[in-house]
Length: 541
Figure 1 (cartoon, helix red, strand yellow):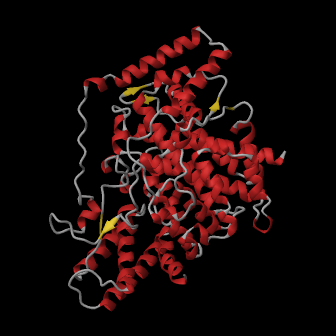
Figure 2: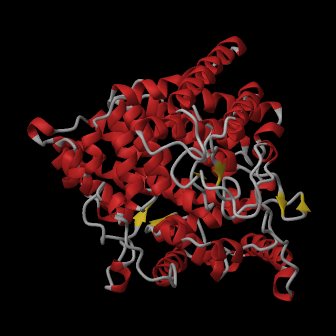
Figure 3: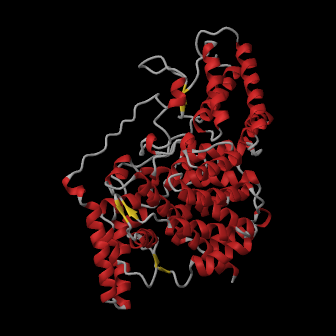
C-alpha cells in the first residue's frame, strides 16, 4: 500500500506552478528511470515481466501521458526526451492507442494542449495541479472553457476539499455510481484515486468487501441511477437510522451529490465517446505498430495515426436541417405571441410527451452484460431503466412548482453542505444559459427556445413538469434521431454508439454537440437530485 502511495507521490510536484520545482521533480524521475533500466540489464526487446519491469512500464506509460497531456511545456518536452533516451538504450517504449480523447470527435478538432488561449491554459494548469492529470473529459469540455471552469471547481470541491465524507469514501462512491452504467473509464480513474488517498484495496474486490455503511448505499445508488421517481423518504430513513452504520444528514447529502454527479458524468463520457486515459489500461501499448518502426517524434507531433474522418457530404435530407429548425423556432415564437393554450391543454400535452418518451427505444443492440470487473462494484446488475416501461409501469408526474431546485433543493444542499448548493447552481445555470448565438454556420441566433426544449424533454422523461411550458414545442424542435440519442445517453448511456452521435444534427459543429451533452448531463443530474432531495426534505418534516 505504501508503495502505491510512494509511486504516485513521485508525480505530484509536476503540477507545481513553479518551474524550478517541476524541473527538480523531472530530474528525480529521470534518475529513477535510469536506475530501473540499469537494474534490468541488457535488453533485446521489452522489459521482462517482473515487478521491476512492470514498474518501469508504468512509469513509461505515465511519461507518455505527460508528453501529450501536461499543460506545462517544459514537462512535455522533458518527457519526450526521456522516452527517446530510454528507446535509444534498446528498451521498448509505449505508444498511444486510439485517436485522441474521443472516439466521436477527430483529435485535430479537440484543443491541443500546446495550442490553447491563456484562459484555457490557466484552467488546464489548475486541473493538472489538482489531480496530477488533465483528463480526456476536461479536454473535450475545453470547447466550452467557462463551463469547464465551473465543472472542475465543483468536482474539486466534492472530491478534495473539506466535507462530511472521508476522501476514500468519496472516490469509492464515484466507483459505485459509474459502475451502475458499466463506465470503466470513470471506474478506473477512481480506483487509482481511491488507492492514492489510502483506500483499502480489499474494498475493490466487490461491494461486499466494503464497510456496511457503503453497502447500504447500494440500493439508493441503483434507484437513483435508473428510476429516481421511486425514491421515498423511507429509503432515506433506512440510511439515517441504521444504528451503528447510520449516515448523518450532511454525509447523506454529500453522497447523493456524488452519486448524481457520477451517474450524469457517465452519460457525458459515453455520449462523447471518451477514450481511456493514455496511461491507463487500453490507452497505450508496448507492441510495435505493424506499419513501420515507431518513432518517438510522433508522440510530440501526433502523427502516430491518421484521422479516419471524412467530412460527410451534404445529403439532400440533411442540407436544410439547420434552416428548417430555425424556421420552426421562428414560427413557434410567433404562435407563442398569438395564442395561449389552456391549463388543461398544457397538462395534456405534457402527459402525451411523457408517455411518448417512454416508448422511444434507446438502442437496437442486445443486452449489455456488465463485465465481472465492473459489476462487482454494485448489486443487481440486471436492474435498469428500460424494464419498467415495457411492463406498463407509469412514471408519476412531479410538479416543479411543488419542489424545485431554485426554491427548495438549492437551500437544502447549501444548509447541509455549505457552498455546494451555490456551486451546483452556477454549473446548472452555466450549462443552461451557455450560448454563442450560433447554429452551425448561422450567427446571431437566439437558441434559448431550443436549449429549453432539450432541458425540459429530459425532465419530462423523468416525470418532471413545468406548468408554464408548452410541451407541444418539443416535437417541433427535436426530431426522432435526436430523441433516441437523448434517451439513450440519459437512461442507458452504455449503449450510445458513434452512429447515434453522428445521426443527430449532422450539420452542426462538434462543439455544439458537446454543448448538447453538457445540457443532457446537467439536466439529468438536476432531475435525480430533485427526487433525492425531496425525499430527504419529507424525512425531515
